[in-house]
Image (cartoon, rainbow, N blue to C red):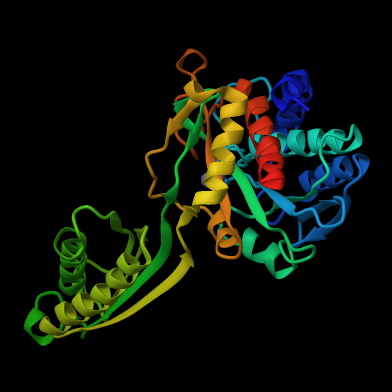
Length: 391
Ligand SMILES: [Zn+2]
Ligand SMILES: [Zn+2]
């Protein structure tokens, strides 16, 4: 089956599906309506459907015995953002918006699922397919939840493909990279414990505010002084909490931040240095630092074989001219958790288009995507499965 041509025929339907989801966005782990729609479609096309990870959906299209099972993953959740796009199909739910385009991902994956079922019927494809519609990507919990429910184990999947839209790339481009694409994500919490006092009697205190300020500044030197300049790493603080009155030196200050990296060695080195620098800076100022680093997600890393399958599929759909080499992002994606278990490739689907205002970044209340990319995404996903199946 020529998926590019079939996807073009189905594009009106896919856009309708996307707009319906866009009007009715649901937050992480509350994708009841979305999951219901997805499950009904998959059942209609002959997939064996079960619910996973709460609101997630697992659909299995059985192949001929011995054929590999290849998985496609989409996410479905929206964000607590008040939409401000003025689109005629804007969100009807106050304060909730598909501002990351997961409605587009669901539409692309449904398109791929439908075409693969059609290809199975017409005899042009005989492999097994697992469709994964995961909840809660935005809070990094959905992949974990459906994996716990056997998303890749029952039946065992050999390879997985997925996409994320990208408004910084031109619509209908397929943006690909072998190796690291998106960063490992860790949550950092540093508590500085000191001795409180009157603000006018600082010599009787061990001031955690001054120590916290020094910790923030000195942790920035880890990226600039301890990480190879040719490697990528980020340490950013997002919250600083401490104290209740302007003239009272508090007992403690709490900092929270995010730590990003690609290579496991860099990640481990960052963690070790954060512990050492925070502890010694705090101690030097008469305080104590409690450091807690939670490993949220590994890096999204596309292995050579699944990347090659995806590249070939993209070449078939958009031609070499439609493929762009990706510049990696320090953003995270829980697609990495699937890649931790089996080979897999995540690609970006360009949805940018200045002419229609599709220029705003993910999570912006003005996020708009060029829907003409949807059939391209669907076709590349379906074709990747076929290429991976046929080897
Ligand atoms: Zn997002
Ligand atoms: Zn997203």
